[in-house]
Length: 475
Image 1: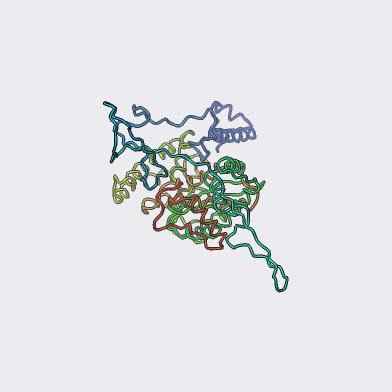
Image 2: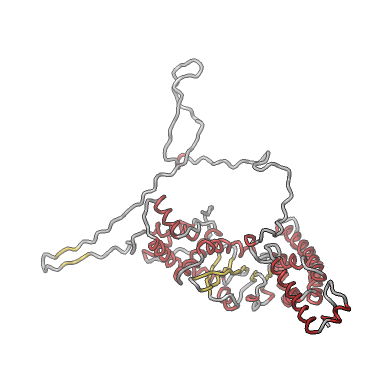
């Protein structure tokens, strides 16, 4: 029996003399203490908690080894000074010529064919362009009836044009400014007074303009051969929602859904899964065929660290697993960096895979109860640990989705979520547009302006799908 072995510090004689009911209670309390201590010792290094939640007494992250060099540019480093613009892009040229010889004082004439150049860039004061529409009513000289001209179809319905709409969307969705901060920015930099209520209305104009391109992006992502997925909590007033992301190299989509379970994952990824999905170990993805899934080794690493900090067999297996994981990433970094060919990488991974399988079996049999559950789940989906070994476009981590989701997490922390269903829909659409455009290195503000202009003219909005010749810079 489990209670036949006395707890540490109690002799076998004292334990045998203890009533059974007391022994059961003591055993349960000790198990509870172990669980509570494990929970208290959770940090960003041994769990999925963010670094900002680490307590003051948490062990600091290991510092990188110092190279011994001073900070800043190193000797021999090629500088990145500002490049001079061509003369065609210069608005004003001021020529500075010497009037007399610096040695003898003789008057100097002529032109320097190659003068030294220096350029200064500055901003003019931004002043808004206000357009007034006047709709006339005229009386017919024949019948006396009055006819009023219709408003032009190119006239925005509200008080602000597409560039103002796009700027509001850019400041909130890309920069992460709050509505009151946007109000201050427009008043200070653009000399334009906009109420907070109008800013919310402008966000909705941007949301409507993005509706079709975002729906098209959702269909595109659900048909890609390799995707990564992740989710985080969100608030809509007092209701808890979940912000999901599915990301490919060139397009990312966001969805705010009511559930974090499998139903949410299916709505995001599609009931019929195409290709391979990279995820963490959350059970909401367990319905995906393990052969179409890549489990995140970065999440596993934190599990291994947590186990290595326990006692007995669990600690031994945790340390051994960390060693195998380190070897795995060393090999993968080599093949990713081009210092190892793909075929050699696959061969080198075979003993690592065998070692991990042995550790999975040992953990499922000999680790503590909580670790055993994790090991058994991994054994069921063992094939999902190694998809990246056989498919070159698959990565062993879910970092791509986590990086793209980070901006949304920062937005949530500043704003505490959204206040309406329409606001949540704006979050979905603007995050999808901004993240996708930056992935494709396209100008975010220009795209949003074009989309809002198309909505005013009732024309199709520009697509968010990859272009054949994407722009060279993302702003």
